[in-house]
Amino acid sequence: MIHVAILIVSDKSYQGSRGDQTGPALTKVLSPHASVSPVQIIPDEFEMIKAALIELSDRGEYDIIFTSGGTGLSPRDVTPEATLAVVERLAPGIPEAMRAASLEITPRAMLSRAISGVRGKTLIVNLPGSPKGALENLQIFLPTMLHAVETLRGDAHECAPLS
Image (cartoon, rainbow, N blue to C red; front, top):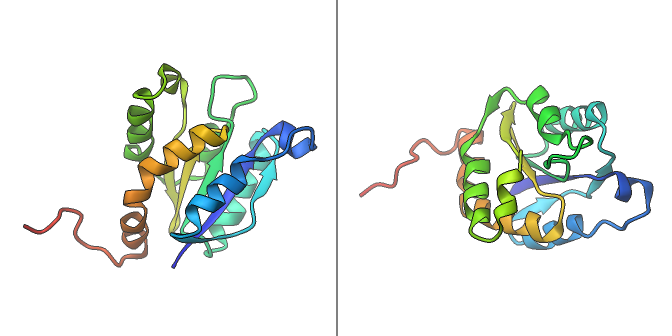
C-alpha cells in the first residue's frame, strides 16, 4: 500500500475565506491507488511549508507528499523554495513531464515553478493549486507512482523494462 499525505498551500483556504476543493479532488483520485491521510491546509508561508514538509516526511509514514498551491509567479508563491530547502535529491523528470503535458492544455503551464524531490524515503511532488490543474498534473504522474515508491523503498531494482 502506498501512503500519501496532501498539503494544501493556500492563504484563502487557511483563513476560511475559500473552501478547499483541491484536497478532496486529489483524495478521490488517489484513493484507489493509495491510502490518503487527512488533508492539511497551511498558508503561503515559507517557514510553515518547510516545517510541514519536514514533519510529514520525517515521520517515515508517507511514501509521497503532494503539495498543491504556491507554484506560480505571485510574490507569495514560495512552495518550490520551501520544497528545495528540505529535499536531499531532486527528481526533475516529474515536474518536467507535468509541464510538458500541461502545455498541450494551456500555455500558462510554462509559468509553473513546481519541483519534485526526495527527503529520506519520501517523494515530495508540487502540484498546481487549482483542482483542474492539480488533477491534470496528477494524472501525468499516476502511471509511474507505484514504480517510484517501489524504487524509494528499495523494492525495485530495474527501471528499464525487460525485453
